[in-house]
Image 1 (tube, rainbow, N blue to C red):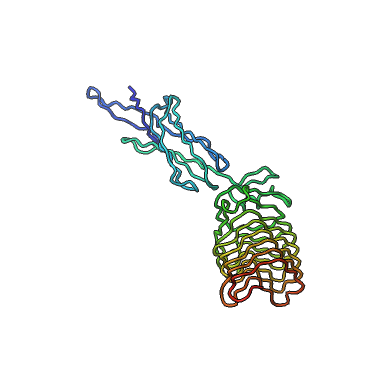
Image 2: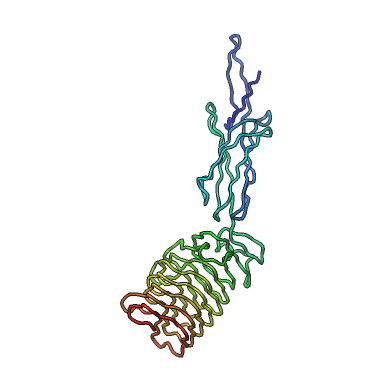
Length: 340
């Protein structure tokens, strides 16, 4: 005699049912039911849909009509959930759209009032960072840089979204937002005591990002350290960095069309950095908009440095043996103490 029920019994051992029949004890052995999630360790691009399938069966075949609950239990989409009922093949499905990069854990569960919970979990990675040259996809900018298949000269494209990380750029790379719009591609410090972008390589391009969160003294949204021939363009480096853009011992770099405002100390700060070009940047609402310290032979053209406030606040400020710099068609208004 065998009792068949369309339920999930996820126990690791067989269930022994003792039944009485005509006064005789009859032992009935039932095999455990199970639930299995497929599409394990799958990878998709943010903005696309992902479907997982839960299959419920036992030794006698598929179980039809079982209710399965799906939950994203950790990751960027935590809290996303859904339910489905198994079909003739014992399958229930769950589909959701990735809106942020990272790795989700997805759990499928069936709860039977008699036998308890049966579940399985898988992980799902959403990528939004792409190495155009290697063809590889990543969930963080740092992972794309560190990858063994990423070499000098490669281009990394970052889809719109929020990236909470501190990025060390130690290869000659072009790192650009896919949209070109800093309003929809944000990089914010995971550790506020560290530069958001720390560039130690030459010939690096960073373009199209909103960069914030390096609030510790002397830390910057973008920091170039001994970097040459790099390009920073069309970035918004604002909202509570200590320094917006900071060049130290760096030369022959181009800073163009960046918006650098609402930083605690400097918008753009050059220290011991020569032969750089600053063109059409806006540096406002800092303590000092643009400062050159012991930096010579730089060219500043068509920059706007306004409403920088504080004791000795200034629009454009040159000090400590900053010689032979060329300033042309810059605007400095509404600053506390000095325009230029």
